[in-house]
Image (cartoon, rainbow over all chains, first blue to last red; front, side):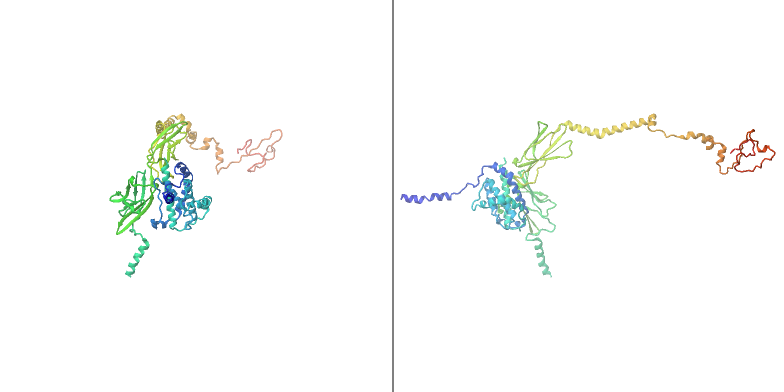
Amino acid sequence: MFHAFFRSTLPVLPLLLVLSPVNSSSCAMENKTTEIHVKYENILIHDINELVNISAQNRDRCCKNKNDKNIKVFFCNDTQEIESLQSMACNMLRFFHKQRISKAFRWKAAFVSCGTLQVLKCKCEGHRKEKVICPHVNVFGKEDTETGEQSRKKCNQEVCELKENISSLRSCWNKFEKIISR
Amino acid sequence: MAALATFLVPVLLLLLCGPDPCPAAAHSQPEVKCVLFNEEYMNCTWGSRETLKANYSLYYWYRNTSNKVECKHYRQDQDIRVGCHFNQNEIIQFQPFHVLLKASMGGSTLEISKRMELQDLVKPDAPVNLTIHNMSNNQLQLTWATTYPKAKCLEHAVKYKSNKDTDWMEISVNGDVFSLPSVDYKKFYTFYVRSKVNKYCGRTQLWSEWSVPVVWGSNSTSKSTVHWFWIHTVLIPIASCVILLVLVILLVRMERVWVILMPRIPNPSKNFDELFITHNGNFQEWAGVPKDVVESFKPNYSENICYVSELPPKDSYDPLWESSNPPPSVMPSASPAPGEHSPYKNSYGRV
């Protein structure tokens, strides 16, 4: 009877550990706001501005007609700015292979995503896209964004989503900077 | 034909206007413009009494379309809604802000929507409490304060010039201190400051108004500048003119000086008074020219020939006319040969 008790309760413990909600973030720079601020001001903001300019050059006439419900919107939640930036950066990586988006545009977007994840020292959950994409983009990213094809693709749903993602990422960085500037 | 027309008109209207409601013929679509003043309140405007043809209602929301809220404080211009005022508790930055303008006109509904990022529409208040500090090495330091809640999110611009300069100098400043090296104590400086949200905290292009100015430099410098202006432009020219006038008058009155400066033109007429008065203009008479010389210049002048011969001495030669032989006949000739006697003995003809 004693053996039966332990045999029945023993698997419960690991099950509890797996099912318990994981609230800890996968970012390692939570309390190092000064370091984040320096890297953002000196490096990342320039790439973000370039990406915003490229985004503005891409046609978006179809985006105004499309239903907003189809476009996933990321919000920069109060007191969760780093987590919000992580979500936005990881989501932006999925556009890297979208052929309906011009190569320069998606490479620059991936470059900024990887830069954001590096500055915040975050990892993406699930498929860990950053492990596959970021090493490639960090080595060849600059060349391909400068010398890559400049042809613009037609406006489509993916372009609209990427533009929305970029706008949210930029705004969330502005919000984070404003909060840490004291 | 009528049936064809009734069919074609809606098709044409649909092609021209698209799926959206077709606006009135002379109506231009208003555009919503919002400004967030120092993050304290916001004003959105979409036109004026003259430009708006319909009375619009404004609705806004942030995340969910289902949470649309109508404007609570409209701004009106003679019963026409031209804008909306938002209090601080109605403003959320760093979230997409959607507005929808709606109006009914002629049975159709007019709708204009716009999406904005409010952190990109912030206009800070002008800086206050501008203060100048005298530092060592002729250096000035200008400091100021701001009522904006996040001072570190601001960048500033300082505009200054001295009373000797013609153009303003404008310098960008990231902190809240501006240093001006090597100032001139004889000059009078004026400073202005304005602010803008920097690129790290937003993307606004809206600068604040210029602050109330602050001045530095001795007040007497400014007063003497005014005095010098009057001296240079009024007193000196008038004094110069008066002095010049006095000199001219003195010059005219003092004939000795006048004569030296303006010598008299010689008048030789007095030398010729005798000619005109005594001799009646007879130049030859006045000059003392002999009468026969005067006569010789007359065109009808004829002169008698006067033969002249020289008597030989008694010892050497007897003249021919003293012998028995009759004297040779004397033929009048224009130029008698030398030695021949002339009808006038012992006389010389006047030529």
